[in-house]
Image 1: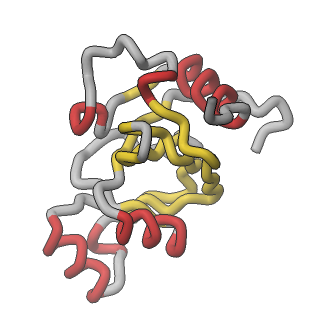
Image 2: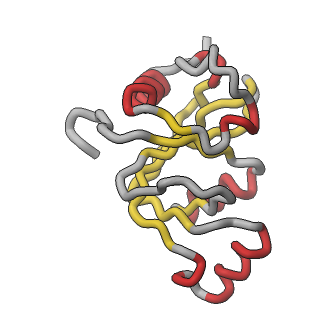
Length: 141
């Protein structure tokens, strides 16, 4: 991570649907998106999931590598094809927010996209930095 804790690039939001997939993301340090975006090395991916307080940011990762299906081992490729996933994002860094940071309390509170419509949403560097810094200091009230 850069000493300034600031990211100069854009980022994306990816929603995790189930607890099982959440555990998998953190165990494998991989996310299998079902949509195509510009997943570049160094891109920040904010992870979101439904939590006690509603949709919340649960952490973030820094893209280290993107593997296309043909680069994956046969069993992993079959798993991706079975679910309709386009690639595997391998994180070089992965962090959790504890507690999760509710999206409705973030700078995106007035964003018209809610719930599943936030999946794949592109964020500016300023939005990414604001969300990460605020989430790191967030405590439930």
